[in-house]
Image 1 (cartoon, one colour):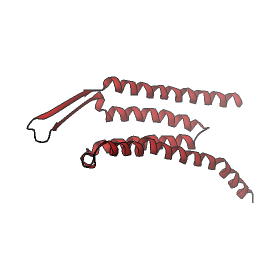
Image 2: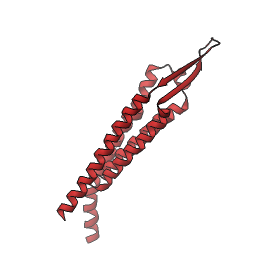
Image 3: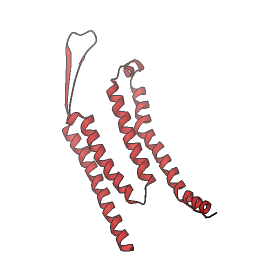
Image 4: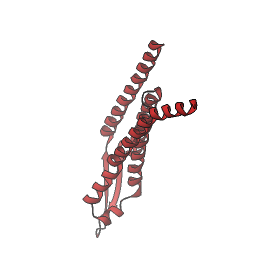
Length: 159
């Protein structure tokens, strides 16, 4: 009987976090994957969209997976030190992702215009944009680090 009461109280504590995590994960999936995909389909004709390189769709999916995973995990572990640890991990993973996705800030591409013999080369220097993304994630890193320090300080004071 004691085990049933203990299990019931544990479910009462965990269930709101699980529901909140699932809801936040679904919202982040809508915002980071479904909405951009639908917008891309409305902006481009279907035949052009099908010719879109799979590396870009893979990068969008990977970004969405990273954001949804860390959102759900941080919500599941809210109120614990793990929430801050996953916040730190999220910042570091997103920094690495952005460096990889933006090819270190320099993007080059070459394509041929239909019915034209010449190749068109495009060079985009996105290092300033990449630096801003890295800086924003470093702020998230610092916020999570200070949150962890504050959590541990409050824990020591209460003991």
